[in-house]
Image (cartoon, rainbow, N blue to C red):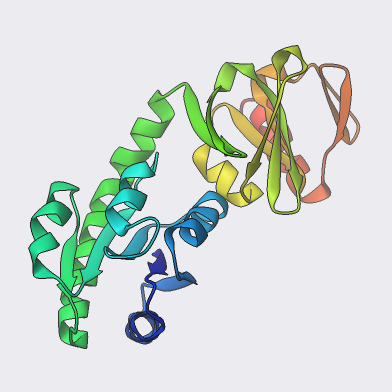
Amino acid sequence: MNCIIVDDEPLARDILEEFAGKVPFLTVKASCQNGFEALQVLQKEKIDLIFLDIQMPDMNGIQLYESLNYRPLVIFTTAYSNYAVTGFDLDAVDYLVKPFAFQRFLKAVNKAHEQFRSRRPASATAEAARDFMFVKDGTKIVKVNYEDILYMEGMKDYVKILLKDKKMVLTLMSMQHMMEKLPKNRFIRIHRSYIVSLSKIETVEKNRVVIGGKHLPVGSSYKNELMEVLSGK
């Protein structure tokens, strides 16, 4: 399970990182000191679990979690037990009151692991049933209809989404994370820098795909999968 730690206290972050390092099924992708740093990570990485402090300046943990379009599992951490009811109202996996021992931490993450394993098929089905997604473009959250997408281009830490009518959305996200968000029956990765809509492919010429008059390269490691999908295998 990919997880992030969000807490404004350095010592609290260090303890959580140490505890998580002892659990084989946890991988800490980032340790963030505020909600804004966490939002940047959540746009780029696929995160399954958040260890989230409630009391933080500017944006508290509850505000951060409520702002998310897709909500990973969350374990709230705080020094104040009176926040527990609010935490469970948000379907929190658990609520850790500081200071907590490793055994208490382990109990919480085992519960999260069970929920993660049980929710994966349901989440995949729900994503496949939707015909749109929401992505962040600058300061805006933009709805993107899958039918409008021609192709996507990776640009370092960003993905450029090319739409019909020459419109474009630029979002802070990795190509891998983008592929995980998209329905597999509608999109395919053809190159380390390109994801295309299967329904928008006009022709395939040698090592190129043509979409909307644009010639896109097909990487050698992606070509076999593309040909299998196009031939219906």
